[in-house]
Image 1: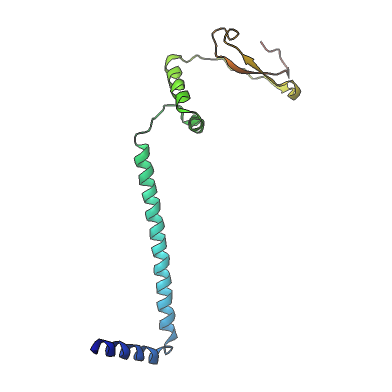
Image 2: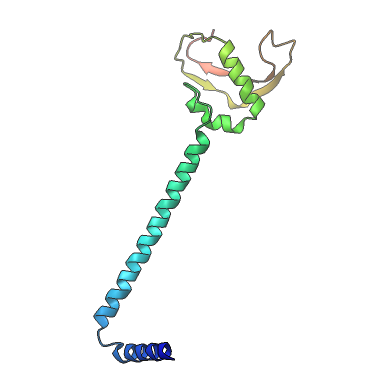
Length: 142
């Protein structure tokens, strides 16, 4: 019974003094809003930190490839066995220097075509799809 009277007395005083000092009420609301925004920002930063740590943990055991980071998006599209095949080929085929030539040319769009290269036609090279086209060049192509 005593605690009910204290609560009722507190509510009565609160109602009696409500609206006497609007500046204090505005200050309290503004402090609560700032604390709410700060809490939301803290939650966002904590979420980003958790996401970073999770990605860092997942990538800790990933395969690191020297000089192949430009192909990272392509690797994501390949099936796992294609990726393994590329790694085997990369180790067994030595690099070969190729001379670079600059040639001004115009490609005839109507001449572009695809063809199939069979195993017997590939002469030891890869079999699969090929592309053929005609160009106009300033110098003869050799």
